[in-house]
Image (tube, rainbow, N blue to C red; front, side):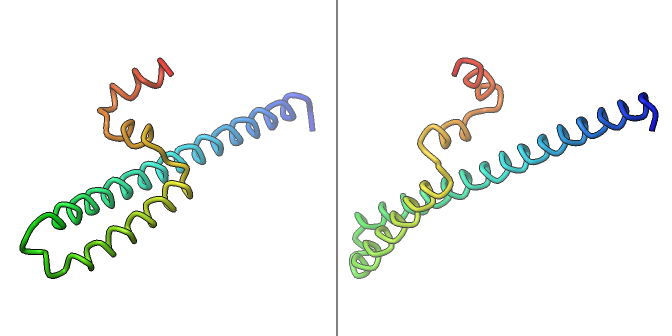
Length: 107
C-alpha cells in the first residue's frame, strides 16, 4: 500500500469514527428527550389525581387515589434516578429551542 492510500484510509477511518460518535450522541439526546417528555406526562397525570383528592365526587375512592399517588411518586423517583433527570432537565426541555441555546452558552 502506498503512502497516499494509507493516509486516505486513516482519514476515512477518522471520519467514520467521528460520524459514529455523532450518531450515538444524537441517539442519546433523543432518548433523554423522550425520557423527559414521559416524566412530564406522568407528572401531569399525578397532578390530575392530586386535584381529584380535593373534589367531593371522588371522596368514595379517596384511598385508591392516595395509593395511586404513592405508586406514581415511587415510579417518578426511580425514573429520575435511572435517567439522571433533575428539575434543570425538565425546565430546559420545556423552553423554546432558541432559549435553550442561549442558556447552553451561558452555562
